[in-house]
Image (cartoon, rainbow, N blue to C red; front, side, top):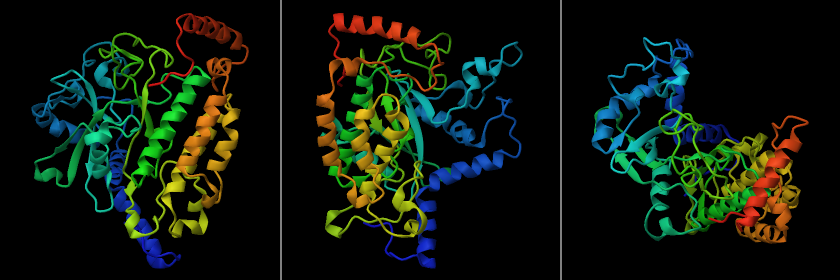
Length: 397
């Protein structure tokens, strides 16, 4: 399967590129349109005013409840803001926060889940890929780091034809809470590289595996749970959420958002596709005239992961990743290593690191000058406790 059929920068290719981009991102485009329409009257301090995108969920709330998923009070049809008539501020109340990705409680188990609306499109394989990696033996494969789709709900109303809802675990941003040690980040690298290898092994390119599309399952880190919009608070939005370190309770990291992902049948010839920009706009082969040329999307994944490591980690004690990251970010995609080579080289790097190096502290980019000694002291006693408890420096899932 290919996303385009021409290889020269003709007007028709330009049309096909724009058309493919809009169709593949049709769901996102509708969200953007709703937000732009609302921007005309948006008063951000007025938390009582619902966004148009929120009314989608308000209309579906009774139906979702009948399907076994309870939304927060803000999304109930008869919602009355809890701070109305009180001296409370909206931001201090549980229902004063909007959801970026809708959260819900599975009524039967009390589990916090995420619900994503997906628009059907001939060019989008998001639903198929999500189901593919969530079924059978693939779902239980430890190398599978694709976010599991727990259920797909088909909306049975003419108002929302061509829309499905994907129910998934509610994940946290990968750096919340922050990484504390080199070993914790090394395990993160291992899981992400392993997960991408798993996708490529099945001839699927992610095409948008940037920083924001890699998330973690924090059930082990937060055994008592956390609030979905104020993740620093407990589920009741009353006090700080208790959590462990990644060294104590290692989380599992997932590749998410398959809106641009694509399966390439090796029997159909070279794996080529017209460029579609994801979150990382710096992909070399997508620059200039390259944006109108077909290219192999698999080296794009290599570049995106390498660029994520360079941007977010390399300058904070991860010099040992420098040579591998430099090769992953080669301007010429043919010179980038395949994912199998990346896995092999990273494994050699990981085995070469000393225990003291793995236990060393990551200096935050936001750390105030002159306060390092204080954080070093905390880190020393924390590390001493881990050593006495024989907790390994690289937390393996």
